[in-house]
Amino acid sequence: MATRHQAPPAQEVRFCRTDDGVRLAWARHGSGPPLLIVSCWLSHLQHDWQSPVWRHFLDDLGDIATVVRYDERGFGLSEWEVADFSLERRVADLETLVEATGLDRFAVLGMSGGAPVALAYAHAHPERVTRMVLYGGMAGGGLRQEDPVEEEAFLAMIRAGWARPDPLFRRVFTNAFIPDATEEQMVWMDELQRTSTNTENAVCSRIARHQVDVRGILPEIAAPTLVLHADGDRVAPDWGFELASAIPDARLVMLDSRNHVLLADEPAWRVFRQEVAGFLAADRSAPPTSNLSDREREILLLAADGLDNTEIADRLTLSVRTVERHFQNVYLKLGLSGRTARAAAVARVLA
Image 1 (cartoon, rainbow, N blue to C red):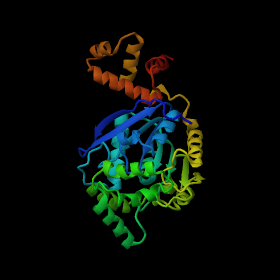
Image 2: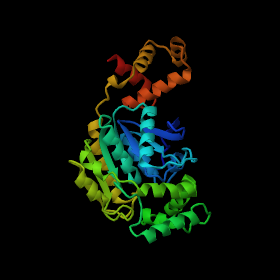
Image 3: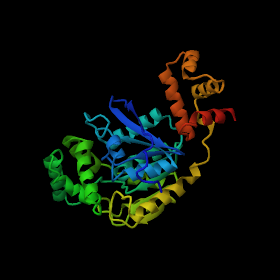
Image 4: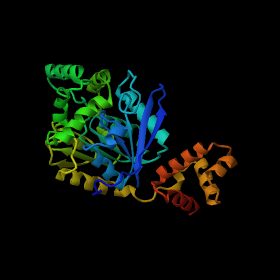
């Protein structure tokens, strides 16, 4: 388990643009095999980094993997002025993001409402996904209430209270997500809601998620899959069983918790971390250098000759920034980080 209150590992935040011009924010940290997190819609790359609710996810997953995560369109550090929240658009955004990161083959963690996007991507690109973890996930319906009257009441609460300083209405959602949280954690989740997006996006994205249904592709998922689900989850009840029973050879682990977002001090979190670490162990063998592009290999060979970034840029008629970006992509593909990453990458290409 990662030690708490230690100096935070560096988080690198970057941006890319989709084919319809929307700016997406993504970040990476940690070391080890790449793990792409397709998170729930409620996220903010920078705000989550300081979170008493999410930070243990980032710390502990960063101990076992090179974590890549992003804010969906309309949320967090990504662009808010958007209109299309459809599943098709969200999958296309993920495809754009994967290309921007330079990832080749990687594990995917689909969380909560991000699970359908992860599933649709894995179905469309089985050659890219080494294995998949689904936590608190669902395959259809989003977070919609079964009773239409209750759902209208939830939408009314969003419209009435999402942007208000008083968290009275937002606390309803907080209580559903983390019923066993401390007051400090609940206050943070209350604030995350209005920090992560505006009222219009919260309403429109929720309605769009009601149209999502990827149950038809579950029997065709080829990646080894681990399904983790809290047995007392009130946000996505019973979905763990449905996902695990429909995906071929999926393994289900039920967690003793009522929280949709597992908290750091509950035993279920230790089980989650152990299960994910064990499941990703098969990806820990050194990624092949064959994943590198010709340009990335060329830059590494020049570095092996002792050239620094400026000299490499001059030799190849590139900007220093472009050379630095190539090195970052190499580190991600090879699962390297820290001060020794450059030397390790050079050694790998010469091996």
